Image (tube, rainbow, N blue to C red):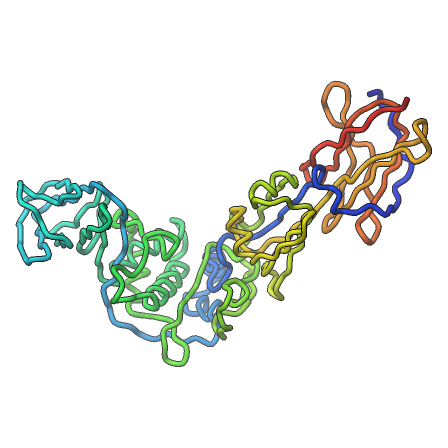
Length: 439
């Protein structure tokens, strides 16, 4: 299309409905932070450390009304593997096997492979089987862990549980949860928070206490340990966060996105806690997850959610995190929690907002020889432009979109040839709307 064939004349309001824009809508999801946003922000803690704060002051900021107390050093049972049919356990020094009948087998330094029948040298072992280390740590499928390993059989498969003293458990958690090269006060704050968190999750009647991944705390074993993180654990040995004499569940995440969230805003059904409230997080800006976004067409959003979506409305708490999402479609609306929406779309955090730009139609009100009116809708974002497709397949801006207060707009163009139009904003573009030419 020749450049002079398109001329933007008027941008004005119309009575179009945004719900009519299923095929030509673009949803721009903008967010900040990574994680649940509750409790301590790890990037924020590092930021405070660079500003000279010690770990006590960092913890007091993120967990107000708490005090530092002391705890004993119980064992923690970590589920390392589940639903395995074979495992390899060994050590570079002799170790000991003890089965459920009390049978003891002394094993020289080597690696043993166990199948589901759990036999050793032709003799069956009765599960659960506990593997005790000698003077060197045990390894599971090549990864070394402190403490003992227990093989539990059930449902035709293995589970492997690592039982380790709390302080040694933390030596593998702190460096697994925080990047290398950070300052000691940040690691110390992490050690106290992680110690407090795990002590509130110990559950003796259950077969294990915690997972080795982000369902609990990331625990990568002996290979994760560093001298500085070990120092952080040792310098805070036994220290926990308490409120009214009891250890608190010290939630934390990677980055709260500038402000933490109150626990009741993120976890449905949780009661407010005076130590898990929203606080400022001004020094997390170095985080690579400080800002993020996701652009989806209506078709793409509908595909991910499993139902036709034409519009989305988000409810936010006072701290800025999303609490509920309303999905509007041709057959009604659906209300879901922000956490569910976040998980369904794989968003990094519940701190997000959703803008929509859409083309809802095009027509020539003055007849086939009159100007073309392209109609649309905008909510929650500025700087939207209208683009036209050229004959060579590239796109060129033909108008700035200026919406009314209700979000509706119409752009009037003198266009003769058939082509396609789309809305674009912040280097993202919506799907094209094909428009016929003049007769």
